[in-house]
Image (cartoon, rainbow, N blue to C red):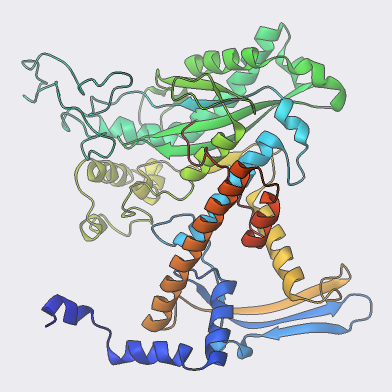
Length: 499
C-alpha cells in the first residue's frame, strides 16, 4: 500500500496526458526531441514565436524561411543561458565549457589566439580578503585543531576564542565565525563591494612595479610590454570573495619579445603591487580596502606536475579546469541566493540562515542609504557587484565569439551551402511568449533527457581519458564527434584539480 506522501507524488491525469501527447506517436516524439535538443534540454527555456527569412543580398531572392508554426505548440525554445547549475544544469555545463576555453586559449593558444602565448611569462595568482573576525577553518599540513588556544580565552561577548575540533572539508562550521557579534559584517560586505575597484587598481600597480624593476618608466614600458589577464571570483566559506587570476606578459609588437623579461620579475611585481595597493570604501565610510596577507603565485608551465597546494608551478590545463569548476556555482552551495531578492522576507522563503543570512541582511540594510542603493541589487551576492569572469581585451577570445562559433556550426550542420553563404542575410521577427516548458509532462521529459545527456558527457569523457592513457591518437575525433560544436575540452588526471 502506498503512503500518503507517495500518493501525493503520484502523477495526476493531466501529467500523464501531457506525456502521452508527446510520446504517443513516433512523429510527435521526434518533433519534441528535435525541439528539446535545440535548446539543450534547458530547465527553463524561453518560448518565442515568429519567423525568420534568409534573403540573397544581391538578387533579393528568398533562399530559406522558417516559422514557429511548424514547431510543437507553435513556439521556438531557446536556452536560458544561465551559468548557475542550481537553476539549469544543461546551460551551466555549456557555460563552464566556454569559460574553460576562454581561459585555456589564453594559456595555450587556439580559437584564433597564437600558440606562442604558451611561452610568455605567465603566472596563476590568488588574492584573498583580509580577516573580518575569527572563523572556523582547517589547517594545512599535519592534522591540527581549528583554533588551538587556551580554553579560558573569551571574546568581549563571553564566547570562547578556541576550537579544538578537527573540521572535515564538508563540515558546516567551516567559515562560520566563532562569535557572530564580534564579526565585522559591515566591513566584509563593503570589502566585497570594493573588490572590483581594488582589482582594477592592482593591474595598474603591477605595471608600475614591472617598470620599476626593469629600470624604466611606465610610459616607456607600455610601448613594448602589455599585461594581459583573466580573472575569476570565488566565494570563500566565510562569505567574502577571493580572486584567481592568470596574468601574462605580452609584447606589443613581435619584435619586442625579448623585452618581456622573465617570470620571476612578474611574480615579484604582483607581490609588491598586492602589498601596496588600496581602494577607498564606498561613500560614507572611512578606511581603505586592501588584500589579505595570504597571496599565492604559481608559475604556469606546460611541463608542471601537480604538487599540491605547496607547489610553485601548475599546468595550463589544471588552471583552466580549476576555473571551470567555479563557473556554475552560486553564492551558496544550495542555490538559495542564485537570484536577486525582491525583499528581505525572501530569506525566510529560501531558507537562508546563520552567517550567510547576516551577510545578506547587512548588504540589504546598507542599501537603504542613497549612496549605497546598489547594494540591494547585490544583496544576494553579499555585496559583490563584479562579474564572475573578466579578462583584458587581448588575453583571449570572448564568450560571445564562442557562442557565435557554436551558432554558425549549428547553422552549417542543418542548412544547405547556399543558405549559409556570405551573400545571404537573415531577417527575423520574434515575439516573447513565456519561460519554461508548457506542461509538467514536458518538464519531466526534459529532466529525463537532461540526465541522459549528462551521463553521455561523463561516459564520453571517461572513454576519451582511456584512449589517451592507452596512447590511441583518436581523442580529437571522439571529442569533436561528441561535442557537436561545443567548446568544451577535457584532460585526464587534472579535471577540476586545485591549482
